Length: 160
Image (tube, rainbow, N blue to C red):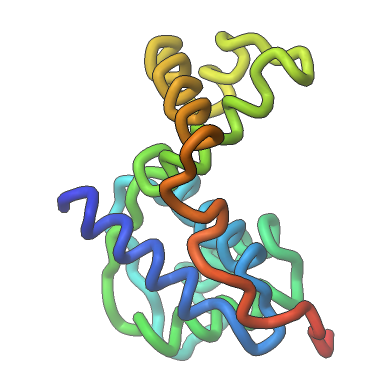
C-alpha cells in the first residue's frame, strides 16, 4: 500500500473512534498503539464476538493505550465499522511520521535524551532519527498540519 492510503486509513480510524465520550487525542493514542503493535500486518477484526482471541488481543492493546472504558468504546466502533474484515495497519513510524518528528525535536537535548536513545526508542536508525529531527524543526517553524489530525470533536465526558 502507498503511504497516502496508509495515512487515509489511520485518519479514518481516528475519526471513527472519536466521539461518544472519546476525545480525538485518546483516539489517536489508541490508533497509534495499534499501529505500533500490529504495524505492517493484516489483522482480522471480528464483528461481534468480544471474547475471542482477536478481540482480546485488540482490547489488550487498546486498554494499555486508552484505558478500560475508552478501549471498550473504541473497540466497539472498530468492530462495527471493520468487522469480519482484515485491515492493514501501517507501521507507526510511517503513519505518524510528522508527529514522531515533532516528538523527537521536542525531546532531543531538552530532557536529556540522546539521538541514539530516541532512535532505539522509536526503533529507527540514527540517520532517520536525525532526519526526523530536521523535519520536526521545519514543522515547528512552518507547520503544515495540526499536531492532532482532527480538531477536538468530543470532550471527555465519559460515563465510565
